[in-house]
Length: 371
Ligand SMILES: *Cc1c(COP(=O)(O)O)cnc(C)c1O
Image 1 (cartoon, protein in one colour):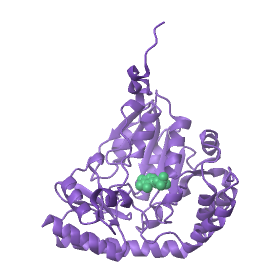
Image 2 (cartoon, rainbow, N blue to C red; image 1 turned 120 degrees about the vertical axis):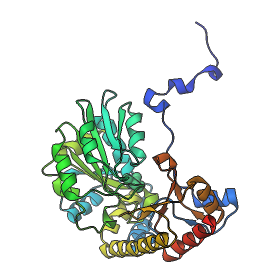
Image 3 (tube, helix red, strand yellow; image 1 turned 30 degrees about the vertical axis):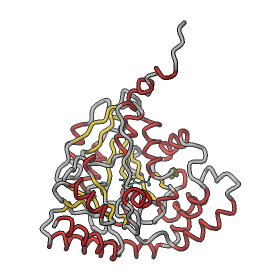
Image 4 (cartoon, rainbow, N blue to C red; image 1 turned 180 degrees about the horizontal axis):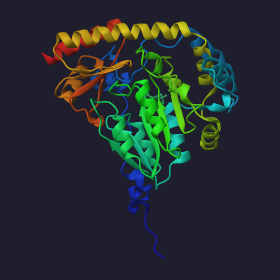
């Protein structure tokens, strides 16, 4: 038998087939990287839909207190956080699964339920993690065409076949900020065959003020194939701690619990998230500040004659022409936004609603760059 040297091994060929075609997720540019690469200091980062207000002081205090116990493994069942969520959402703890961010949950669903023979449906312009978790388990991604940048539920319904195991729906969607009304989404879920799981990703739930915007948790009792995911990364301002959760039937939660890592949520995150739930006034203030910031941004876009995709999240896509060039020029002005070419939107930039002074800085820079 001949032995080859390591250098001749085709590592890409060794990767599982779905992974070979994957591209890594493109995160928003970190502030430190901008400093390193461009020498720009005191930049404004409006690139990752983080809360400009930071976390609630209650969450910060709980995180600090939890630091004292980091020698111990975290509570692998997340008893305290599940109890706090159960109280706030009026749902039994057996229907809650905690994740290392809600991205962890999205992956657990794919690993727990989706085989290489399955198809997974999601929309054009939908959240980038859906194709990653789909292809990583070797399944076929079925991407339906968007309608007015949002999810086309009729197209999604038509895409369902006997091979479909999972449908991802972000409500509202990132990066477009588009949303689905209660009636339409409810009848879609009702029309889906029982063996097809539906994930309704509500990462921005707490920001949305539209009267017809649904709380999908209310449908869990009727749809045993429904999962609702939420996160502490967005309005709660805890993105760096990585904690999110899924609400589902107890049977689905049981499967997710089998595939998750035993200690997938760390002890500081568990403590901070539970404390954050005890500060609803903070959430209300953050949502209100977002409404005002969004109003300011859209008013100025209109003044400047720029089109934008109306958004109910804490971010908005504005059409700027050659977006990659505008993105680079904004970096030089010390403002980090998010290019969305990889979402099929090469003319748009996504900007997160920041503090009033950050929004002004972005708008001034944008005016300068667009000349
Ligand atoms: C930000 C975001 C998430 C949440 O990510 P975490 O892993 O919880 O930080 C999930 N879905 C969408 C659509 C998002 O934009």
